[in-house]
Image 1 (cartoon, rainbow, N blue to C red):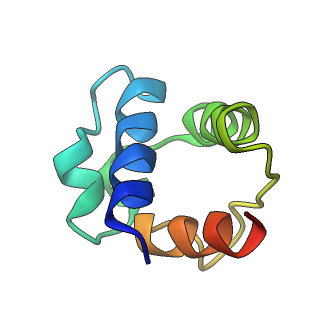
Image 2: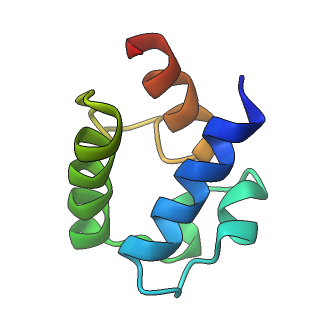
Length: 77
């Protein structure tokens, strides 16, 4: 997994949550939902990933960590 990709995705998480989930928290490896990513934030994150990387992802069950999201994006690049 690319540290650069993880870092960029962590910044996107911070942006879509208005800073309520920081990039550092997202990089900690925990559940983004537990950290405060709500359903609206998840939709914004999906849209941001699509705009920036041109890939569509599904944030269904089991994919609420930054590592899981990074793997999904990397697999589609």
